[in-house]
Amino acid sequence: MSGREIGSASELSARIAKGWKPNRYLTNMSMAFFANASNYVATSIFPICPVEFSTGYYYVYNKGDLARDNVRRKPKFGKVPPAQMGHTDQTYKCEVDQIIVGIDQIGAVNYQRANVPPSIDPKRAKNRFVVDQQLLHLDILFANHFFKTGVWNNEFTGIASGAGVTPSGKQFIKFSDANSDPIQFFDTRKRQIVLDGRRTPNKLTLGYNTYLALKEHPDLLERVKYTGSTANPAKVTEKVLAELFGVDEVKVLDATYNAAEEGQDDDMQFICEPDGALLSYTTSNPRVDEPSAGYIFTWDMLGNGNFMATDVFEGEGGTHSEFMEGLIATDMRKTCDDLACYLSKCV
Image 1 (cartoon, rainbow, N blue to C red):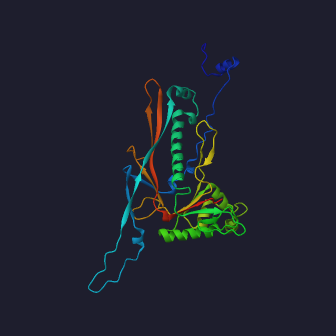
Image 2 (cartoon, rainbow, N blue to C red):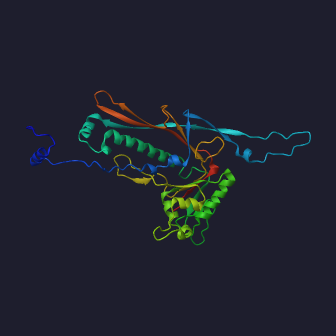
Image 3 (cartoon, rainbow, N blue to C red):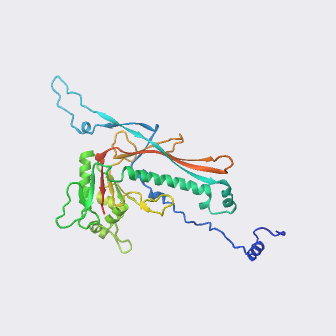
């Protein structure tokens, strides 16, 4: 360039004078619609149970034997018959799911030379894409296995109140209805789970619309209205709901996904039923002496200690391509109907 330094002010001025227009990308922002990782909650609802083999068994002790009073009066010069403590077994089977995304090595050169923002760097961006897809897939599996109608034996359906309308059987007044009594309803459900499952429910998982209805329910607002101030007005949060309903934790399911097939217009929906709710007892970690409403069995399919694994491999010779894959091996399994209650049409 006639001795002029490439990229100098004089060179840039000369190029602009000839019609060249600067086209520089911002290095500090991009519009990447990756979800906030905290929105994905599948692995925080039921405990993760790592397993050594992709298929296997686990023991289920007979609840009736454990709950029965088996202690008897000892007869003189004799002994009582041995108490029964039976068990059955159930199976799990971790299936492997996979995602693959390609990287054009030649095309990537342009990005590398242009000093583009890290968000568009092919390897970095597609690694984020693969991880995000795995978390999205886990939440969809959670919705299909746990958070929908037809899964749990204890299932209740919300109805609207009105003249002469009285909930019966497996019905309750919708939480969006001011005539409903959420605290009394959940206390009743908790009592039944204690009777049937011998554990007090410790977790309440709410669909997004259900959460919105509860946080605006007049009875709940009435209970917290004197706890606020002008600077910090009273409001119903997940923590407040947990205290009001007497559970350790309330989780709100606000993760979304595109339900449309590729090539169709986007159809954004909540992954889990937005008007549903799940009351359950779960352990924080796998236990040999504790029941849990559900478990997420995970298999380390590559032997590297991860049930969610990523790998990169070269494409065919001459294609100048490489591929990034993500692998997941899980089995989401309902393990005890007595320890959970599912609510549909809460709103």
